Length: 528
Image 1 (cartoon, rainbow, N blue to C red):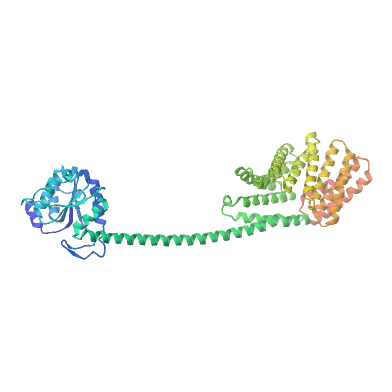
Image 2: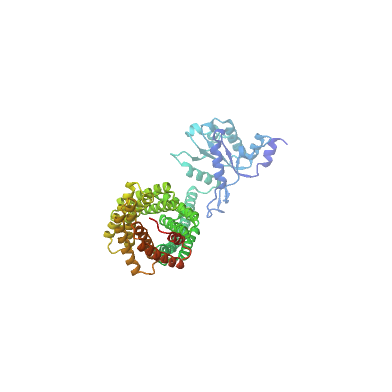
């Protein structure tokens, strides 16, 4: 059977909704249009209606596209002729390249010869019609009849892409263009409304989720603040009360419970700055208690971690007073560890850094009594090293500076009785500084001032272990000074009273290593 006979035998068979004819130069556009046509759904209200082209289907498929449909055809011409014979409509993509394509021209001629009564749709892509329409499209057919093609103009200044596509659908289905436009617009509107409603629902859902998340976050923040408020109480009021009765064992339990709270946090970096500062204060407190129990390695580890945290916070905001204050404490405690271990060359730079931070604080907030108090402590630390080393003179002068600064604090807050113990302590170190300079009689006057203050504090609060310790130390220091001045009987009496004091303190808290060290010192004979 010849190819012509085969085509003739299949001429009545309708397999394709349309045959897409185009030039290779327009292949990209052809592919896009082909995909759109095969995915386009006819508006539901138009499906099933009867037009000159028959009953309107749900989709305008299949569309024959020769380069896509026949990648392995043995005879392209034969397959194309057969596809043309089985197509309802010929869709021609018109462009200057198509006008010059003999294959497009041949496909138009063959389709019209096979189906003179079937429609040909011209889709103008670019150029003017006279430059883009193939000759066979606008020329007379074999019977001399000129057929006016259905035109869909894709040019932006004419129909444009959207309207041109709908014109093609109208030509393929026989539906009036205005009906397709109207129904398609309604469908698009319904789609927009549906998407808008979905978006609104999603927005509302997200808003509700956000509200729930915010409430949960607020509740978590509230609980965190409550927990940290309790920790703050444990670090301040409760700690001072426990120190007052000399219970290091209870203090250790308090510190560990506070530190456990932060250990349960999933990410310490995510904690607010004030929480990290509070954690550093817990580490300071625990390190202090470790040191009092004689666990110097444990104390150093906690002070070092606290120093790392406060240093990082200060670097992020070097003018924040609370961060300066927190880092000052870290510098002090690390210096204190070295001082107790008699590593004075390492302790002094820490104490100098502590003083520099305290000076920075009083410059930033000159009216803050607590910051001036911190400066007095810092000056006192440098005084301590100078007394221990018996010089140099400029560092011994810090003993007087510390006393004057603490007296200034007392004038700022005349109702704050807690300053009495600090002033007494400053008189004690002033006495030691005078002794280092050989001024023992003047030193005795400073010791008398210290003793008067401490004795009054013990009388007002006899159960306060801190005051009892200060009174024990005051009596012992006075005993040493009196012994050097030749009043050995009075000196021995004060030393014996100090021994009784420290024995009572140890009985109240056997774990306090500092008191045991003092007990050992008090057991030694007095020396000139």
